Image (cartoon, rainbow, N blue to C red; front, side, top):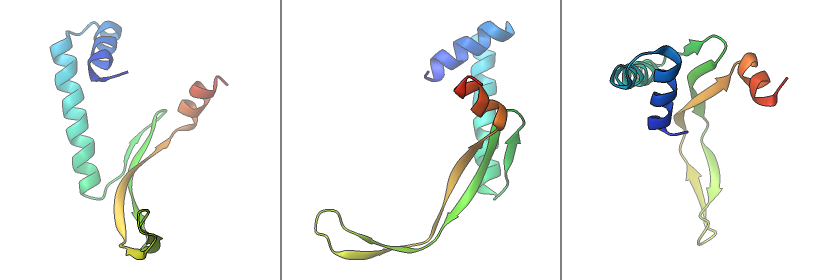
Length: 92
């Protein structure tokens, strides 16, 4: 499902027009992005939690040359699905 299909589905389910749904979806995306940038978690009960996770520095290898290299520590966004979402996907 892409963004257009998501907007159409939500518009059908809610009875809202597609422009309003697209605007709301954009606002949700901005709000989640800002919260993560500020180091906050975003929890959506029944769906899951968005958070920022730290990755430790580690050693790696250049896949082309095989030379060892150091990979710096970093942070990245992560999503942990709620139990209800996991069960819905698994069909439980």
